[in-house]
Length: 200
Length: 200
DNA sequence: TCCGATACTGGACATGAAGTACGGAATTCG
DNA sequence: CGAATTCCGTACTTCATGTCCAGTATCGGA
Image 1: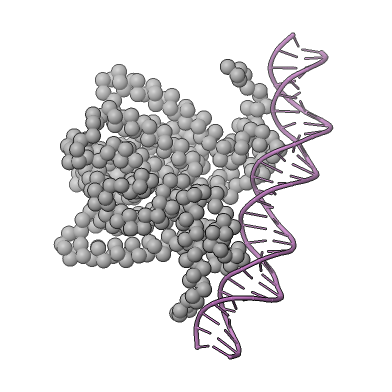
Image 2: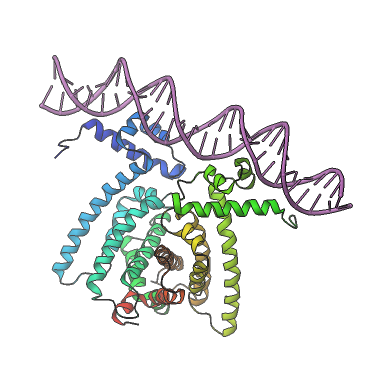
């Protein structure tokens, strides 16, 4: 309502700043980047920078949120399609996110890979936690006595996934998403024991 | 060889600085802490601080390393004992680290819990990766075709463990270490599927 | 016990980044 | 085209970092 059509200058500046930040992260590492660096690369005055966001973290968060929104909508569609299919595949987010990461490799590598990724990984982690939590709520009717609490399982799965994702990204996203997805879901559902004894 | 007996003044100063940092983290969060804050709490001149370490991160790392060394030696003993037993228990580090964390709750909560934990978690993550890697090298003779690469499994397991550990710490380490250890190792070895259908 | 060596004090200083403020130039929208 | 908005560039304040140094306290060895 408030913002009908965004001024082209604003859009340009924001996009330029985003791109500048992303391009800077692999070179210096997120922590070492200064606001002046970003403005320098983007050819934008520092005053202008502060007119758009309150700092480095803010800029990063905006960019990440924007891209994750796209993934979320895709995930929504997938979920609906799976419901139509009759039964949703477990850990459905996995393949989706792997593919999304591959499609925006530079972005993800900058945001989540190696050093300096901790900040934005928090956002992804939370979103994933919600997805897994919802999925477990359907699959596991209630907490069995003696079993691990649901939140425990959520943390377990999401933590494992995040680790695998960043590892995959750091190594250049070599194996195709489908394969990485298969490996992850196999480990998660059947455990490492099954993985060790059987082969495929 | 070089440092026979450490000067008492040095030992005092270092310990005081460590304690000051630890006590500050829960209040302000690691990122917001300044060197002056630490010196203020510790009643130590800033010059003195820089005579001992190069900065905030350095101080933190030293403290963590020191405490992890203790754990490592314990782990070594455990590993030897298990070998004498005939067969080492899988994921042996789990119980050990949970117990160690409980015994140094404040330290771990400050270092690994909530916000500001990302820095030092890196150290723990690396150490754990080494342990798991070594364990897998024994258990899984070689990479089966079609199976996930060993490093993939390592990242998976360590990521899951770190997530569970920080979750446990953030919630006050309520369940006893033995129970958390059991839940984790069950999930890791048998997968979440087994956890969902069976109870215990 | 005493003395040389070593570590701490406390303050001054340089550096560099974070934010803020504002007049004038450029661009956009209607 | 004209009014409104945005951007530029510069200057300024604030704050934390890191270094340096002379004086003082404390330690370890003889």
